[in-house]
Length: 236
Image (cartoon, rainbow, N blue to C red; front, side, top):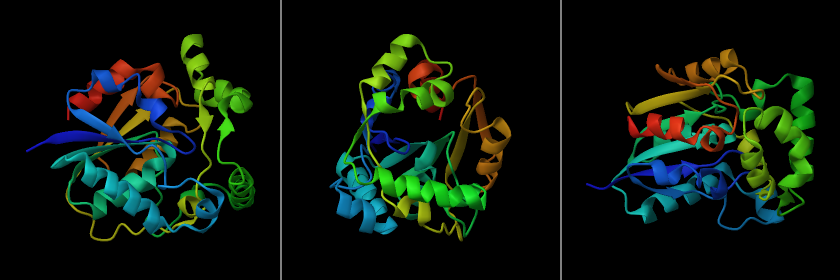
């Protein structure tokens, strides 16, 4: 029985977010480095959420793992929730400062209505690009995502690229009916400036997650506090 971690990065991010933490994990791991097999404009605009889930499931199948601990960061929360429901190899899902919509709600529904339209337009505008240099987003990341990160870690992040999301990821309605009895853990990043502690706990409650772990970290915990996060994952 081969166990392993499958790591799913948050919106716009790729396998680079996990590189500092992977050597600290006690099981082998694979990453779902993008949302679709082909990250082009047509797919970002027209792909369905089922396409996203099928692609991630294919990576899980190819991993050779019999049992999977699925680790999902930020905007990958709804992917983790749906893969936990639909993929029998997934025995535990760990959500890290993750967006878990309420039953029969979308990822974008957590925002006020006037903000929702702005966010949809922003995602559509980003989707024109296959990638965006993270350096172009440095001010936002320094102020909101990396507020406890070292200068060395921020420099590493700024060397990477941001990968625009498929539109379906923010528009898909989540159905949590008949959710299986698998392990569910939510890691709250207490210094996160993108989501408050209370907001993160509310999101965890949308899947009735009882196992709440707190790490004194910003949103990029797998980089800024990789050892603490690896300790949580290895304890499962």
